[in-house]
Length: 526
Image 1 (spheres, helix red, strand yellow):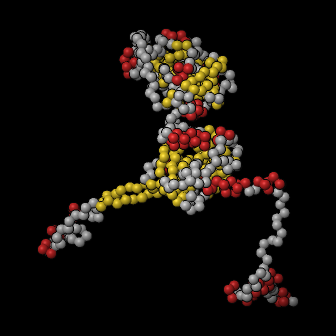
Image 2 (cartoon, rainbow, N blue to C red; image 1 turned 45 degrees about the vertical axis):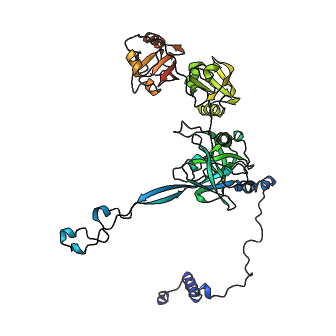
Image 3 (cartoon, rainbow, N blue to C red; image 1 turned 30 degrees about the horizontal axis):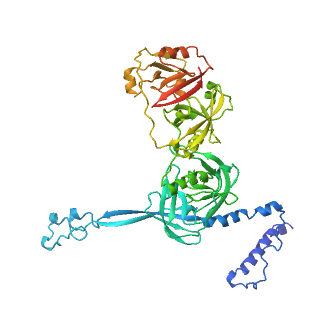
């Protein structure tokens, strides 16, 4: 009985494995040798459509982006700029050293080579010029039936040749009508006599709101007629490090990549609302932050370039600065007050002639609300030289409107008048509470800092790195003209104005630096 129990017994699982292996090895013919089913005998896919309940409103919306693309894609072109470089070179740059290093032996003079068998020196070849063609890639939007195209300045800048390819495969040569680097707008035109091109409908970019649908159309990475969809992420955007340019970008998360520059940003109605111009990226590709020039700004530049060949911008003649909470407190303004503070008014310029004064707050220009420096700069630039516009200002907490007739931004500023100089000389005074020292403006200092003879105030002669004055942006050699809206013409006046300062008090300085004036307000800290 015990001997029977000692015999090996196969488990059911082991038997199943053996059976499967047997089946596998007996049916291991390649699929190509097996009998194939008759055509049509296999049913592919479910015979029933997915039972998904789509609301009627969504069903009507499902084709809207395809409809937009169908209308707009023909108006967006590929812009291919070509830069032609001429290079001069010789085939054998070492000839002058070794006669003919490819056939002769430059060392035979040293090792006894047969001089009589040497090849006769060949004549050095003349320099041979060659051209090298470098192509770029961008996009453009057709804005007239006779071939005007809106694109970016950086797309066509420096191009010797420009080719335009349409979505239907046609290709044309084009030339630059005009460029404006300050807004990155350019206009090009097809050379051929064309009369019936598809044209984009220009919308109203001022009506855009964050959250609106946005469709970007262009040629990213040379992939022509690409359509991407997103929303308007923000409006009125600026980028750091470009204070001299005019920026009012539309930000969108519709995918924009290299090659999209100059392409179309349209709304859900298919209206052109922006010209795609740049992306924010750390990888070189799309990261969901793209920028487009508003069409209202681009159209103004476009018309100037086409009709005048240059862009003319309005000039107000003021120095401006942000209105922060400390400045509001110092001026006695309500916390909700918005606008731009006038730090200086240039003599005999439009603002001066209209009666605008230093310390005024501009809240509207030509009916447009002004809340930031960028808004004011762009709104003034949008006015044509010679045009009059109402400017709403806040002065001593009272609103008033003045009419300003702007001039050209390119006109030189009027020379500053001079007056007799005060030769007051006083010892420096120290203010430990603010971390700086102020002194009188001496004749030597006036010459060194190139101050006008009529400049009255005190100069910051020393400033502590860790002091509050330095933290608030004040610098050595800044001229303090006013303290809390009261002029200071001497160290005595200055000391009188600040002697009772204590922690928590608001103080407002009017500073002159490098010929410009601005306000600096802050609360006194320990």
